[in-house]
Image (cartoon, rainbow over all chains, first blue to last red; front, top):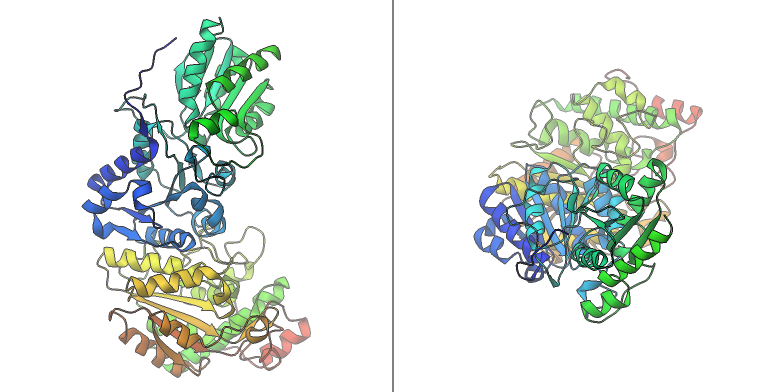
Length: 317
Length: 281
């Protein structure tokens, strides 16, 4: 199995901050907005270097989405920053009408997604955001897996014309993708080739999928691991090619199974090539307070859960 | 400067357009459209500095955002008669495959429209963003927006109102169509909003009132006054006192025609009160 090295644990939100800082230096049209969470979103450096291109909105996310839409009229590329919950559910209609339906070039950058927000509990742990955002016509949905990839994704979406939802998180996780990677929106990344089962993971679950694949290899199971950083548009070609070889699939994500990556894969495969699938995801539940590791264990979102799902899906082949 | 008589003629023609558009498809919102006819005619044909060709970015020209998107009939008629698209296209209002959707949208590529509106309360935020983009671009032109009074019941407006003053967005003129009516009745019956002038002032806006909101001269004068107050550190609000359904006697002074189309007979009666001036589409 291909070996991946953790270059040092880091948070994906810091990858966003680093990407935004670089954009501040390279793209004069990039502007940033924040609803009173500068530190949490790691936007300090961008603000320090580009004070005139930063808009502190205050605790008013609906207003922030509208202002972002307006800023595009005049050629700006707005990046909004707040928690994933307040970036989606709280402002769904503003995004729907003023951004998505209005075809505005706004980048909705959402931190603290999923259970790994930890101790704050369910009010802040959104597990429905991917579903909400992927249902909006024209919305691109991206959930990168580590610091380097989040930084690369942040830079890449500025070059793309159209609304984007970029989802990342709070905990420090393994940073294993190349620093100089080219981020291609909508293009899956093959992490490990295998023959028995396809594991398709997104976000924080990608590293867990690699750990699972390593353990499965010891048990004599060859797992193909695909990193889907772009949930929409989904790289259906990569998924189809893989399941044609392996004949079964496990999807893994820090999100509700309803509306998530797994659902998108199932929906595609149901018509393209019906394939046994297991879902590593939350099961239509809210989260709760706890450490990220405790929560991922309790809600079945780690390497052990992926291994279990693989064993299960193999029996259904 | 167009002669006042030309604007009067245009106003009557726009009224006819509104009535014929909603009658044809038996749907749409004539009341607020008729009430804002003089305002939009004056804004687009007298007040705003516009570029000859439509460009989404709207650099170096004044911008307008319609927040209360349901008064699309008046918006479409004024845009068409200002030359943004063929007047004949008004025939397609609310029909399948039309660029003239029930509520305005950019999605079908209709020139003159820069944001979708219809779900209420969002336009002021958008106007604020566009105004701030102008400042970043060192573009001295202005941003205008129009909002229903009932629409101010949506909380997002008050986020925007607070922000506009707090951040000194003084290149924005937001007009409130102060007709005191909404779908379910008078605004006082549905949800009394108190003294809007005091409220805007308390939030830090410069507020002026146009008491005769269906009088072209009063509107032109009021808009010029509003313009003179921009660039002074405060956003500017116009409370435009209008009569919903203005120009058609049986539609005036009631909320009944907020979202109802006239019958054949009612249309005939309404058109007789507004004889054609520039020719129907």
